[in-house]
Amino acid sequence: MTRTQVAIIGAGPAGLLLGQLLDKQGIDNVILERQTGAYVLGRIRAGIIEQGTVGLLDSVGASARLHAEGLVHDGAQVSVDGTRHRIDFRALTGRAVTVYGQTEITRDLMKVRADSGRATVYEARDVSLHDLDSATPIVRYEKDGARQEIACDYIAGCDGFHAVSRQAIPLNKLTTHERIYPFGWLGLLSETKPVSDELIYVRHERGFALCSMRSPTRSRYYIQCSLADSIDAWPDSRFWDELALRLDSDARRNLVTGPSIEKSIAPLRSFVAEPMRYHRLFLAGDAAHIVPPTGAKGLNLAASDVGYLSAALAEFYRTGSTRGLDTYSERALRRVWLAERFSWWMTSLLHHFPDHSSFDRRVQLAELEYLFSSRAAATALAENYVGLPF
Ligand code: APR
Ligand code: PHB
Image (cartoon, rainbow, N blue to C red; front, side, top):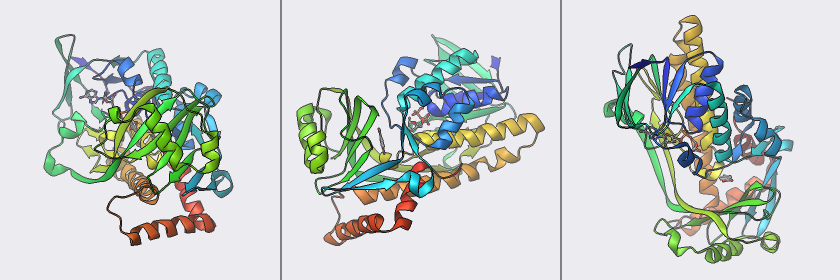
């Protein structure tokens, strides 16, 4: 049996960032991750980073590469049935976002984690949580065939949507809210020049599309697809043809195609489990909530959660006060629900819904018309996109 102050389940962005925020406060912590480090780095996810998230990465010394290689975007474009409009984040809010892949953030966090000398156990199997309502909760797991036990003061469940930590909470102590959207996103990564120097969100009768990027030479594209689709039905050539059909003529002319480096289908879901605490267990990131990727909020919400949680734990270890811990769930959920609303709204605004009536489609177009003709409406999008205050 070993002992630590905070046991963290999951070495995704939430768990790794929390571990380093605690390390900066001198709080001992151990991270348990089911997969190998290489497997965690193999996942391709979104890549829009809010300034608040950058600030947290700065504070743990994990942002040098982000500042050197990340692309600062002052605006984004929205294309509606072939006509492009620009939302100027900088002019409307004074803020911008940074385009930098989540995979790279994870890599940078893994590096500072290794340098800090704090323990990260990869390939920790059968993690289970015990005695959550006692003063000394225990985490059990298996490593290289041997049973291990960690006694701690608190447990942070940062283990993603299929979290064992969330499942350790009795069902009658948790309320869940969910919306499943009737489509998915087919994503393709390629070593090709992006069609535009800003992201283009595309609303089209054939379905949503998104032109994003990872660098000036690497593109990330998505097209809305059916949930019944399989990757095999989408050879690269079909993907590029379908994307081109949804773009405006300028973007179509600029589109450089090439072989895919990665291609995957993701379903779209909104999900919240509340409260985000059960006695000595705190949930953070995807373990507690999922947003559809349309607003690029997933990683940023995980960051604000662990920002609040690390501050509350630091207050506890410094002063003995549990005030921050007692209000963690309420504080985090307030920001979570604002991001849930925004992500749902962006999704509703831009996708083709199979069950929409002609009335629904006309209202969607009117909403877009309002967005492009009202500074107030554009500001509402911009201030959510760049990130609401932590
Ligand atoms: N035991 C240990 N580790 C686990 C277990 C388990 N039982 N179950 C899951 N994990 C690990 C996963 O292997 C993963 O590495 O927890 C980690 C959770 O990481 P993410 O799914 O990335 O979630 P989070 O850190 O909350 O990040 C949120 O990043 O992953 C994206 O879409 C997500 O953008 C969102 C943000
Ligand atoms: C991405 O670059 O992967 C990305 C960007 C913006 C989104 C979603 C995904 O809204």
